Image (cartoon, rainbow, N blue to C red):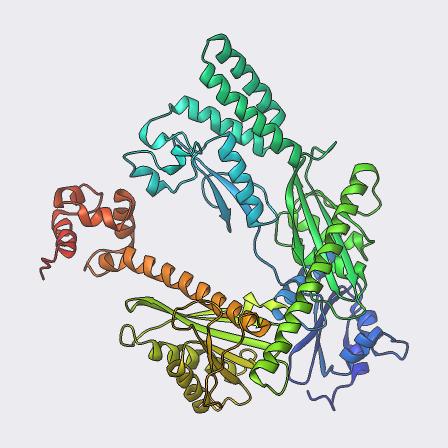
Length: 609
């Protein structure tokens, strides 16, 4: 249906007066907006009346060329479907939440004599207990660090633990009791695990009482060294308790505050579990202009909590439209009642005010950073003599070890800083090992062929980490793909590879450009270059590690993935497998003598057909 053929009144007449979700589409079929309604016909009709004054709504309606809809049984079901469709399509006129990763947890393994504590994100399928959720990975790591100081429960991987012959550095710095080499009995270790569980359940007061009793017993038995260790643990635990405890609160709740100002929108989420403040996280949702804080917060709560663990209470700073529907949808999704409360008193009111202050501070900090980034973009325009201030920058780098496991990175910056959702890595294949020019060419071809097809946004400035040779590859690729309007610049370190001596290579200039060491334009180029290098080398190390752990075993005929995995587990890694004898390999369940000999020969250069 074309825009000229679109008759909104005809569409409205076809809609039922039932709950559901509607989708506003433009002439190209792109989703402009997704909304829910208790009565579809009445809600959609309200967009096409003369009384609509909101400029944002009028701008959207002017682009509508078709309307799709889905009928649901209840308004709560419509809210859940709306949330899923917004995540799928990211419509420009909806409130969008960039960070949509799963919550991180602390995982305590089970069915082991010496369980381990670990960071966990994703599906909770492993046998054991999960504590959280935490608002961020940093909050998990801080808590694990605190736990190691008070309850030295191991956090190492099982393969590392199973192959120790002497204590590791964690034992030396008193962060572990070395159960791997028998320095602690299973009974004493189990007591530390029990105390760690009590702490994570918010029962740190009970733990302190137990430790005090143990300290007194050790003192009476004249075991002053142990008494001193317990005294230090109690002091550390009290310090942690003072920082995390929330006065008068015993249950689970979140405090969510939204602040909408001219400089942008910020939402702060404080997570409280078992009466402990587990930390906070900051979000900057993308919202159309003239959207109220209440509307933003309502959309945020649906985007953030549906499909995740939701506490029984959520404290907010502004009234949430259609709160009852949102509570019903969250309760259905969580499997328990969920209450959204705005008017709170006493301590709870102070927590909400704290969240609001944090949101305002975060907005001010972000505005200052954006202003600084904007100034650096303007300085870059002047330094490179560009016609306009660049809005989007992309930088490529190559990483490998003597040609092994070559990886190319592409990082993206805009006026807000790094756009990490647009970062990409490329595993480079079918080139001569160590040929950086060919690697760069392949990465650029793969990246810009996709952008040429419309699968992304072209940058204003393409930065290459390298000299004239790498820049030449970029020029050739863009010419072949007929990509116009993208400025190319290469950045190479000076003779001594010291920061501040970089040389810039521009295809349209014969001479190199050297910017002053205090140039803000140079600082921006250094930042994006270093970020591309970090992203490339991280990908290279991951790929190299994966290759070295698996490739030799994968080349052995008749050795399937299950037996490969079993062998690696039994020996704790490929290095130990390479050192094993035929008899050692034969002891692995499922490995015959012939297979053991074949594995042994693979690592010792005597391969037989």
